[in-house]
Image (cartoon, rainbow, N blue to C red; front, side):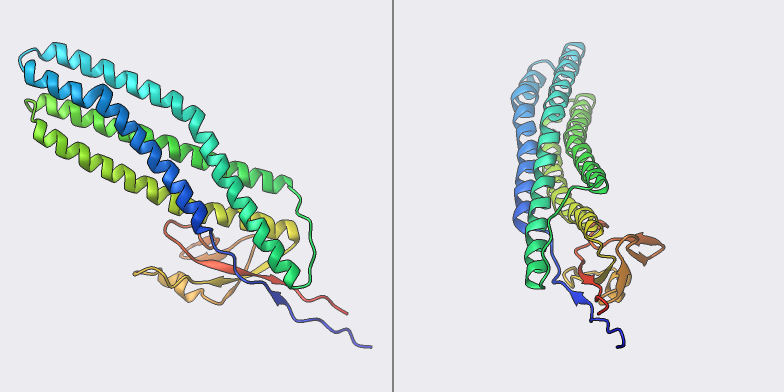
Length: 265
């Protein structure tokens, strides 16, 4: 009898979990808010009061500012050394659990039963994703404090223009808050992409179909053109000179469907 090959099975796409993304965003914004509270309590209020009283005593106020800034930077470096790994690990672990749950459901509905195992490749991928997020969380704090430090020094050298300082500090807080939200949104997609690739390779799924999100106002033309095309899971899709996975680039909301090759019978 001739060998018949079953048609490949396409599983439904799995998108990054919006609830996990929102929780991560909330946690990162909370860090920014706590830094702002410390800045207001330890530096800004006292600085404005001292600046009004000591406009002539430049040496005294600059020494005090330097001391407080150094204290806050040191304090938040220690806090984030402890906090960042915990926040990042929680985010990555929740993303893994969510993906595994949905993948098992889709496989079961397609007639497949699997038991996930943590491979060395997956361990390395998850460790890398966690480390990236630890670095990003720490950078939120360091960049915020560095920016505020520069604005306070500018206020001193410009003759204590407190109105401009207040305006600059509000603007810096808003920018930092938006950056924290962007990191959460972007890393939600990137961590999902890393985990998806690792899980597919663990299961021996070699092919997937690229799906454009059609969500952005200005979509990447190459991503739009890739919609519906098959790609190699191990390499990704070759777009704009690079091999990439759906969701890997900043603000990319593309996803993909796993393809399970037919079995010869």
